[in-house]
Length: 487
Image (cartoon, rainbow, N blue to C red; front, side):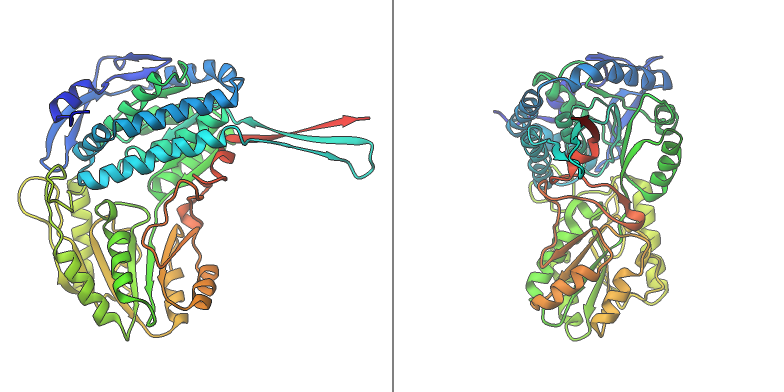
C-alpha cells in the first residue's frame, strides 16, 4: 500500500457524527477546529455536537442494545478480529493521522497502532470465554446457576494523548461483551477515532452499536447522558479532577463506573541496579509519548551512591534527543499538545528551580512555532517542589537522592495517586518486598513500560478504579445474574 499523504488522508477521514449507523452533521451545522500542535495551524474541522446530538446517539445505542446482546459471541469476536486486521493493514494511515493531530513522532505512533490494535485481537478471543457457574446448594435442594450478561449501553470518554489505544481498550471489551456505546473522543484528537469508527463499520459492526460524537462542549453533551436512566455504564480516562465530577454525576443512576485517572509515578533506582538498564528504562518511562502519559515517570528517586552516575548518563541521553515535527524521520520528541501544556510544564519547572533544583540539561520551551519543550533533567530536587506532588505531563525528569530503602518507599508512597511505580534492582527479595509495599495498581520491575493488552491496567487511590485489558477487562462490561432452580 502506498504511503499516505497528509492531504489525501485528511480528505478521506469522516468529519461528521456517527449516530445509528449514519454519518451526519451536528445539529445547527457547527464545527470545531483540529489543530496541528507542531505548527499551531488548523488541520481540518469536524462536527461540533450539541446536547440534542448526544441524546440521539444514546437513543441509537439503546435501540441497538437488545439485538446486539443476543448476537453470537463468535460473531462479535470475528468483527473485532477483522478490525484488528484492518487497522494493522492501514497502520501507516493511523500513525500519520495520530502524529498530525497529537504530535508524537511517527515511530511512536506506529507503536501505538500496534498496541491499540492488539486490544481488538485480545478481546476477540475473550468474547467466547465468558462463562458462568453451576453448583448445588448446601442442602442439596436447589441448583445454583450464575450467568454473565452485558451491562448495557455505555458512555466512553477518551483522552487526547493516546487517540487510538484509549479507544480500543474500551471499545474492544464492550463489543466482546455485547454492549452498545456512545464514544466521545477528546476534541484535540478526534480524527483517529473517526477513522476507527469507519473501520468498524467496514468490518460489519451493526448500526447503533457504536455511536460517535465529537464536541467542544463535553460537559453539556455528556452530563444529560450520565443522568439518563437508560445509560448503564460510564468509563473515562483523564484527569482526577474531571473524574471526580463524573463519578458524582454517575451516582444519581448508580452507574457501573470505571475510571483511569491521573498518576504520579515514582521511579526507584537502588544501589545494586544495573545503571545502564535503569537509564534505558527511565528513557522509556519518562519520554514515551513526550511525557504526556498517566504512566509517565514523574519522580526519580535514586540511591545516593549512584545518583551522580545515573543523572549524568540520563541527562546525556536526554540531550541527544531531536525535537521537531513528528512527521520528520530524524525527530524523536514531538510537541506538547497545546500552549496550556507548555505553560504548565514551565510553571512547575520554574517552581522547582526557585526551591533549589538544578537544571542538568534542557530547562525551557523551544522557540518558534508549535508547542515544543526541551527534554529536561533536574538534579537536587527538594520534596517541597510542586512537581513532586503534581503530574508533570511533559518531558521533565526531577531526580532526588535517597539513603535507605525505607526512605525510598516512604517518598514513593507519599502521594494521593496510585497508578504505577517503577523499581530497578538486582535483588529479587527487594523486588518482591517493594512490589507488595508500593501503593500502586501496577509495578514495573526492571522495565520502563508496563502497559500490555494481556494485563489488567488501572490504579488505586486517586488514580481511579476498575481495570482495562487482561482477563479482567471484559468484566467491567458484564453483570452476574443468579438463577435458583428448585428440585
